[in-house]
Length: 568
Image 1 (cartoon, rainbow, N blue to C red):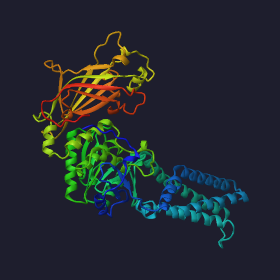
Image 2 (image 1 turned 45 degrees about the horizontal axis):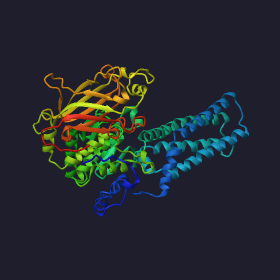
Image 3 (image 1 turned 30 degrees about the vertical axis):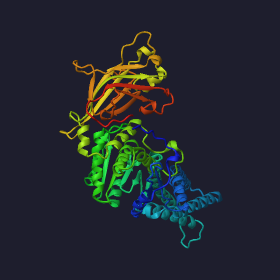
Image 4 (image 1 turned 120 degrees about the vertical axis):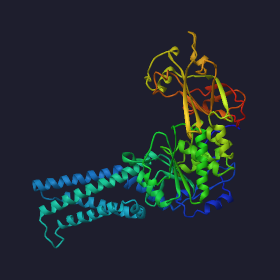
């Protein structure tokens, strides 16, 4: 089975089958993001969101987001109100009369704010704003505007009551100061909305019922979202309280959340025991045993009730979330294949307004995509059988003995290599002989006694080279030997991550790898050699500075235990 590369082209999205349309039509109460139909053709991939609402509604969303809620606009309003307050203070202190120009400016400003109020009334979805708790601030701003106009009108002598000039100025000052405070909070509302949309990038958001969350219904029972955040981070990510309010109102008692962040955590009390931790490193696939356990658990939960939903998130809700979401979709749809699941996630997670294929939100990492392919091959096997082959130290698990790893066609400059490694200046000047190449191998396996994944790391240095050594011509090679002196090869079982560094990683532990890739010993073929080209290697697959002929060759002794063989 060949690994199918992901190419986001419009040809991948097509028609829709009748059988799965009926499945989606039974969820009339699902939110807008979930009103979707999926095709069941192997040649017509992806999904198509139903257009909910008219063109008028889309214009409203565009106008409110780009104008009335814009930070720059509210900043201008605050500056104008502040300048107005300063002018009133000067009049009050210096006892200056009100001239015609000042009256005209005052009338224009009041007219501006009246037009703004009318636009808010016409544009805003007041039910959503009420649920979000914003209506009281808009209403207070409107009342203060009416009070400001009334005080201004009193200076014309139209009102029957005779208000002294100084008292009138004091009233205007108080109203303007109050409006400044209110508009600062309204500006804060616009700031948080704008920041969340900016950080969310091109991901489809859930904007309904007073919510504005980085959250997408991939299917009626499968949700992908960003990290629930607290404190200042909640200003530009999903606020924890809003996420809690969403699940406890929309799916109360019928949801489960999978946190994939190894590096982040948050208070879980408000979710009432619904959060499960399956953390793994960012920009990496999960250990295959972790993926097996998570998908089977999620599948069992969803089978119990058609109203159950699972929500999957990492930090940004893209790479790690996409891998696990695609794996869950493969478990829910036994006839789907990996590419279809990945394309479905990319199509549904990307906002409708994104037209460029390169900006679609999907899983790009070659190793992450490779592991979705792995899961496609074993998803229909019983969980016990999968775990038996994936557990370390088990007789049924595949153990490969790695011998050598070689890099070819490294046609990049020395300074580029130095810039890739943190801790060295990007403008460093040195020749090939000073490039102390390192290979870090990390082995992950499932320990059934402890019920979790464990890991062990090995570090190797490149072979010694002579004075005539040329990086571009000769490449770099590593002899992989066991730390046990009795063996000349390194025998490993389970997930193996290979990371290549252009410097001594022990001297510079904070450096970034030049390239890396993941494999699982159960899927290595009996050929004893694996060749990975640039497009199959993490960190370099999209780098235009790396030669397209760059490749890595891994030599090993295949396992004697029968495993799921898969050509990658």
